[in-house]
Image 1 (cartoon, rainbow, N blue to C red):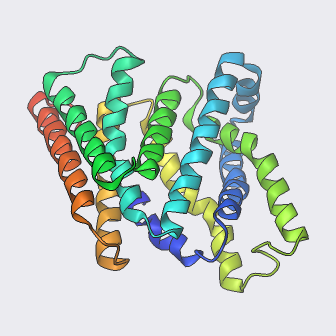
Image 2: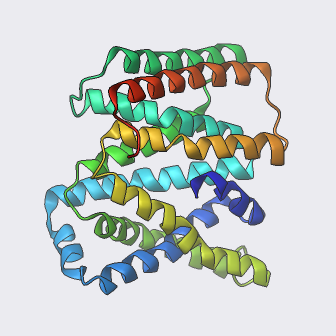
Length: 278
Protein backbone atom coordinates (compact mmCIF):
# COMPACT_ATOMS: atom_id res chain seq x y z
CA UNK A 1 0.00 0.00 0.00
CA UNK A 2 2.76 2.44 0.88
CA UNK A 3 4.55 1.56 -2.34
CA UNK A 4 1.75 2.78 -4.60
CA UNK A 5 0.71 5.81 -2.52
CA UNK A 6 2.61 8.24 -4.80
CA UNK A 7 -0.08 7.64 -7.44
CA UNK A 8 -2.76 8.79 -5.02
CA UNK A 9 -0.92 11.91 -3.88
CA UNK A 10 -0.03 12.86 -7.46
CA UNK A 11 -3.79 12.94 -8.15
CA UNK A 12 -4.14 15.78 -5.61
CA UNK A 13 -0.83 17.39 -6.50
CA UNK A 14 -2.49 20.76 -7.06
CA UNK A 15 -3.19 21.06 -3.32
CA UNK A 16 -0.60 22.65 -1.02
CA UNK A 17 1.42 20.03 0.92
CA UNK A 18 0.55 21.55 4.30
CA UNK A 19 -3.15 21.36 3.46
CA UNK A 20 -2.72 17.74 2.41
CA UNK A 21 -1.07 16.99 5.74
CA UNK A 22 -3.91 18.68 7.60
CA UNK A 23 -6.54 16.76 5.63
CA UNK A 24 -4.71 13.48 6.24
CA UNK A 25 -4.96 14.10 9.97
CA UNK A 26 -8.55 15.38 9.93
CA UNK A 27 -9.96 12.44 7.96
CA UNK A 28 -7.76 9.76 9.51
CA UNK A 29 -8.77 10.63 13.07
CA UNK A 30 -12.43 9.50 12.79
CA UNK A 31 -11.30 6.25 11.14
CA UNK A 32 -9.07 5.31 14.07
CA UNK A 33 -11.29 6.68 16.84
CA UNK A 34 -14.34 5.06 15.26
CA UNK A 35 -12.53 1.73 15.12
CA UNK A 36 -11.50 2.08 18.78
CA UNK A 37 -15.12 2.78 19.71
CA UNK A 38 -16.43 -0.19 17.72
CA UNK A 39 -13.91 -2.48 19.43
CA UNK A 40 -14.95 -1.18 22.84
CA UNK A 41 -11.53 0.26 23.63
CA UNK A 42 -12.44 3.85 24.50
CA UNK A 43 -11.49 3.20 28.17
CA UNK A 44 -8.01 2.19 26.97
CA UNK A 45 -7.80 5.43 24.98
CA UNK A 46 -8.72 7.47 28.05
CA UNK A 47 -6.16 5.51 30.06
CA UNK A 48 -3.45 6.37 27.51
CA UNK A 49 -4.12 10.07 28.07
CA UNK A 50 -3.84 9.50 31.83
CA UNK A 51 -0.61 7.50 31.67
CA UNK A 52 2.23 10.02 31.81
CA UNK A 53 4.89 7.78 30.28
CA UNK A 54 2.68 6.55 27.45
CA UNK A 55 1.42 10.08 26.80
CA UNK A 56 4.93 11.46 26.32
CA UNK A 57 5.94 8.64 23.97
CA UNK A 58 2.77 8.86 21.90
CA UNK A 59 2.94 12.64 21.58
CA UNK A 60 6.53 12.29 20.37
CA UNK A 61 5.41 9.53 17.99
CA UNK A 62 2.63 11.77 16.67
CA UNK A 63 5.10 14.56 15.90
CA UNK A 64 7.44 12.15 14.10
CA UNK A 65 4.52 10.71 12.16
CA UNK A 66 3.32 14.17 11.07
CA UNK A 67 6.87 15.02 9.97
CA UNK A 68 7.07 11.82 7.94
CA UNK A 69 3.67 12.41 6.31
CA UNK A 70 4.56 15.95 5.30
CA UNK A 71 8.02 15.16 3.91
CA UNK A 72 6.65 12.19 1.94
CA UNK A 73 3.88 14.25 0.33
CA UNK A 74 6.31 17.12 -0.32
CA UNK A 75 8.70 14.72 -2.06
CA UNK A 76 5.95 13.42 -4.33
CA UNK A 77 4.57 16.84 -5.23
CA UNK A 78 8.05 18.21 -6.01
CA UNK A 79 8.90 15.20 -8.22
CA UNK A 80 11.39 13.64 -5.82
CA UNK A 81 9.89 10.18 -5.49
CA UNK A 82 13.38 8.73 -5.98
CA UNK A 83 14.51 10.56 -2.85
CA UNK A 84 11.50 9.15 -0.99
CA UNK A 85 12.35 5.68 -2.26
CA UNK A 86 15.94 6.05 -1.08
CA UNK A 87 14.70 7.17 2.35
CA UNK A 88 12.57 4.08 2.78
CA UNK A 89 15.42 1.82 1.61
CA UNK A 90 17.56 3.40 4.33
CA UNK A 91 14.83 3.23 6.96
CA UNK A 92 15.17 -0.48 7.82
CA UNK A 93 18.90 -0.01 8.32
CA UNK A 94 18.14 3.00 10.55
CA UNK A 95 15.80 0.73 12.53
CA UNK A 96 18.65 -1.75 12.98
CA UNK A 97 20.97 1.03 14.18
CA UNK A 98 18.32 2.35 16.59
CA UNK A 99 17.79 -1.16 17.92
CA UNK A 100 21.49 -1.29 18.75
CA UNK A 101 21.82 2.20 20.22
CA UNK A 102 18.53 2.49 22.12
CA UNK A 103 17.43 -1.10 22.83
CA UNK A 104 20.92 -2.57 23.13
CA UNK A 105 20.08 -5.18 20.51
CA UNK A 106 23.20 -7.00 19.44
CA UNK A 107 24.20 -6.37 15.83
CA UNK A 108 25.79 -9.20 13.90
CA UNK A 109 28.82 -8.45 11.68
CA UNK A 110 26.82 -8.53 8.44
CA UNK A 111 24.28 -6.10 9.89
CA UNK A 112 27.11 -3.70 10.69
CA UNK A 113 28.35 -4.06 7.11
CA UNK A 114 24.85 -3.33 5.79
CA UNK A 115 24.52 -0.14 7.84
CA UNK A 116 28.04 0.90 6.85
CA UNK A 117 27.35 0.49 3.13
CA UNK A 118 24.27 2.68 3.41
CA UNK A 119 26.28 5.33 5.25
CA UNK A 120 28.96 5.27 2.53
CA UNK A 121 26.26 5.68 -0.13
CA UNK A 122 24.79 8.71 1.61
CA UNK A 123 28.25 10.19 2.05
CA UNK A 124 29.06 9.67 -1.62
CA UNK A 125 25.87 11.43 -2.64
CA UNK A 126 26.64 14.35 -0.33
CA UNK A 127 30.10 14.76 -1.88
CA UNK A 128 29.08 14.25 -5.52
CA UNK A 129 25.93 16.38 -5.42
CA UNK A 130 27.06 19.03 -2.94
CA UNK A 131 24.62 18.27 -0.16
CA UNK A 132 23.01 15.51 1.83
CA UNK A 133 19.72 14.04 0.53
CA UNK A 134 17.67 15.65 3.28
CA UNK A 135 14.35 14.22 2.11
CA UNK A 136 15.73 10.69 2.27
CA UNK A 137 17.32 11.20 5.67
CA UNK A 138 14.25 12.93 7.12
CA UNK A 139 11.96 10.11 6.01
CA UNK A 140 14.29 7.41 7.31
CA UNK A 141 14.90 9.12 10.66
CA UNK A 142 11.29 10.11 11.33
CA UNK A 143 9.78 6.73 10.53
CA UNK A 144 12.61 4.80 12.17
CA UNK A 145 12.07 6.82 15.34
CA UNK A 146 8.31 6.36 15.07
CA UNK A 147 8.68 2.59 14.82
CA UNK A 148 10.99 2.56 17.84
CA UNK A 149 8.55 4.57 19.97
CA UNK A 150 5.62 2.38 18.99
CA UNK A 151 7.60 -0.76 19.74
CA UNK A 152 8.49 0.48 23.22
CA UNK A 153 5.00 1.72 24.12
CA UNK A 154 2.66 -0.71 25.85
CA UNK A 155 -0.52 0.94 24.51
CA UNK A 156 -2.54 -1.23 22.11
CA UNK A 157 -1.69 -0.44 18.47
CA UNK A 158 -5.07 0.89 17.34
CA UNK A 159 -5.45 2.86 20.57
CA UNK A 160 -2.05 4.46 20.02
CA UNK A 161 -2.97 5.47 16.47
CA UNK A 162 -6.21 7.03 17.69
CA UNK A 163 -4.25 8.90 20.37
CA UNK A 164 -1.77 10.24 17.81
CA UNK A 165 -4.44 11.56 15.46
CA UNK A 166 -6.36 13.13 18.36
CA UNK A 167 -3.18 14.97 19.37
CA UNK A 168 -2.73 16.29 15.84
CA UNK A 169 -6.35 16.96 14.88
CA UNK A 170 -6.86 20.29 16.68
CA UNK A 171 -4.09 22.18 14.84
CA UNK A 172 -5.04 20.34 11.63
CA UNK A 173 -8.69 21.44 11.85
CA UNK A 174 -7.62 24.99 12.69
CA UNK A 175 -5.39 25.11 9.61
CA UNK A 176 -8.09 23.71 7.32
CA UNK A 177 -10.62 26.25 8.64
CA UNK A 178 -8.10 29.06 8.17
CA UNK A 179 -7.43 28.04 4.56
CA UNK A 180 -11.12 27.77 3.74
CA UNK A 181 -11.91 31.13 5.37
CA UNK A 182 -9.20 32.89 3.38
CA UNK A 183 -10.27 31.37 0.07
CA UNK A 184 -7.20 29.19 -0.33
CA UNK A 185 -8.82 25.97 0.85
CA UNK A 186 -9.11 22.88 -1.32
CA UNK A 187 -12.54 21.73 -0.12
CA UNK A 188 -15.01 24.56 -0.76
CA UNK A 189 -13.28 25.71 -3.94
CA UNK A 190 -12.21 22.30 -5.15
CA UNK A 191 -13.69 20.04 -7.78
CA UNK A 192 -15.83 17.06 -6.74
CA UNK A 193 -12.94 14.71 -7.52
CA UNK A 194 -10.58 16.73 -5.32
CA UNK A 195 -13.06 16.70 -2.44
CA UNK A 196 -13.57 12.95 -2.82
CA UNK A 197 -9.84 12.28 -2.84
CA UNK A 198 -9.29 14.42 0.27
CA UNK A 199 -12.09 12.64 2.13
CA UNK A 200 -10.61 9.28 1.12
CA UNK A 201 -7.23 10.26 2.55
CA UNK A 202 -8.38 8.95 5.92
CA UNK A 203 -8.79 5.39 4.65
CA UNK A 204 -5.72 5.62 2.40
CA UNK A 205 -3.61 6.74 5.36
CA UNK A 206 -5.12 4.50 8.03
CA UNK A 207 -5.01 1.15 6.23
CA UNK A 208 -1.20 0.72 5.86
CA UNK A 209 -0.51 2.45 9.19
CA UNK A 210 -2.94 0.11 10.96
CA UNK A 211 -1.05 -2.85 9.51
CA UNK A 212 2.30 -1.39 10.57
CA UNK A 213 1.40 -0.54 14.18
CA UNK A 214 -0.07 -4.00 14.67
CA UNK A 215 3.15 -5.56 13.40
CA UNK A 216 5.52 -3.33 15.39
CA UNK A 217 4.90 -4.78 18.89
CA UNK A 218 4.99 -8.37 17.63
CA UNK A 219 8.15 -8.42 15.51
CA UNK A 220 11.84 -7.60 15.96
CA UNK A 221 12.90 -4.34 14.39
CA UNK A 222 14.96 -6.33 11.90
CA UNK A 223 11.84 -8.15 10.69
CA UNK A 224 9.98 -4.87 10.26
CA UNK A 225 12.95 -3.64 8.28
CA UNK A 226 12.91 -6.63 5.93
CA UNK A 227 9.21 -6.22 5.18
CA UNK A 228 9.65 -2.52 4.49
CA UNK A 229 11.87 -3.14 1.45
CA UNK A 230 8.72 -3.77 -0.60
CA UNK A 231 7.45 -0.18 -0.50
CA UNK A 232 10.61 1.63 -1.68
CA UNK A 233 11.05 -0.92 -4.47
CA UNK A 234 7.60 -0.06 -5.81
CA UNK A 235 8.28 3.66 -5.36
CA UNK A 236 11.55 3.36 -7.28
CA UNK A 237 9.80 1.67 -10.21
CA UNK A 238 7.05 4.30 -10.21
CA UNK A 239 9.56 7.17 -10.10
CA UNK A 240 11.58 5.93 -13.06
CA UNK A 241 9.01 4.11 -15.21
CA UNK A 242 5.82 6.10 -14.56
CA UNK A 243 6.92 9.59 -13.44
CA UNK A 244 10.05 9.87 -15.60
CA UNK A 245 12.37 11.14 -12.87
CA UNK A 246 16.02 11.25 -14.02
CA UNK A 247 18.36 8.71 -12.45
CA UNK A 248 21.67 10.59 -12.46
CA UNK A 249 24.95 8.66 -12.05
CA UNK A 250 25.47 10.18 -8.59
CA UNK A 251 22.04 9.05 -7.44
CA UNK A 252 22.52 5.61 -8.99
CA UNK A 253 25.83 5.28 -7.14
CA UNK A 254 24.08 5.99 -3.85
CA UNK A 255 21.32 3.49 -4.63
CA UNK A 256 24.03 0.97 -5.50
CA UNK A 257 25.62 1.24 -2.06
CA UNK A 258 22.24 1.15 -0.30
CA UNK A 259 21.06 -1.82 -2.36
CA UNK A 260 24.31 -3.60 -1.50
CA UNK A 261 23.60 -2.94 2.15
CA UNK A 262 20.07 -4.26 1.73
CA UNK A 263 21.41 -7.40 0.02
CA UNK A 264 23.85 -8.03 2.88
CA UNK A 265 21.08 -7.41 5.40
CA UNK A 266 18.73 -9.88 3.71
CA UNK A 267 21.50 -12.45 3.31
CA UNK A 268 22.21 -12.24 7.02
CA UNK A 269 18.51 -12.61 7.80
CA UNK A 270 18.20 -15.75 5.70
CA UNK A 271 21.39 -17.24 7.11
CA UNK A 272 20.19 -16.68 10.66
CA UNK A 273 16.59 -17.59 9.94
CA UNK A 274 15.47 -14.23 11.29
CA UNK A 275 13.95 -11.11 9.87
CA UNK A 276 11.88 -12.97 7.28
CA UNK A 277 8.12 -13.46 7.37
CA UNK A 278 7.04 -16.99 8.19
